[in-house]
Length: 326
Picture (cartoon, rainbow, N blue to C red):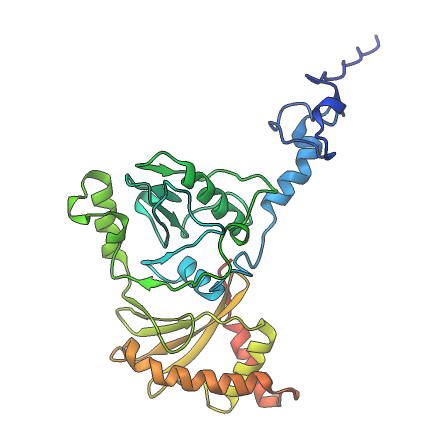
């Protein structure tokens, strides 16, 4: 007995009527018939490319933003900090301020306060491989959210705006590192319930951190056994590793007695050298040696000759100790 031929899936409208005037196939539900009229489900047809675009990892999501290195630091290194943000064209009339924060209460991606002000969190789980697009989507919805409500994360449209499209490229990006998370609320003393508990837990876990003022995107932190300096650098990775190897072979990577360059890690397409510091060395004591190191690094970056044998060995040691965070 011959098999019955399976009827072709019917679309709810002729394909030509469902495709936009620009020729683009509109986004529909994954299990719906594809608007192109193929008879296949969207996820198995044009939705496949959209899904791939949404999950593709953007290795330098903050590239092109003012303060890219500090964006990386706030995402990966700094427990508590805030930065005022400026939109292209200014804020909506009913939004008095827009502030980027490291972590928000209950790990919310964004929060619109009762007065209409918007807080955007940079440290939260995101649904796709493009962190900039994910944050831009949350920001867009937060600006339109009802005052007094949190904003959840959702999968953005593959062609949706990115932070680079929304933020004013000429506005400064100047993080203010804070001792705790009281910036969550207008009056932290009035916090209660889950928010109060979340605030208490977050403050207890926050590692004391300070941003150096003499160099860019260098962050000191205190831990029980030793202090550290973690410095997010904008230079191309290969050139930076060569320069660090030249300095290491020359014994010029130290920031003073008892300090040591212990390695580096990658974060969002940038390289972050890390130094161990003595417990008695605070952030202020790092300022002068960090500025001096920056000058030495500039000279090493300008060198064009091949690495010596000792420098190659130093470079191998640095790369062997390198960790990739994302």
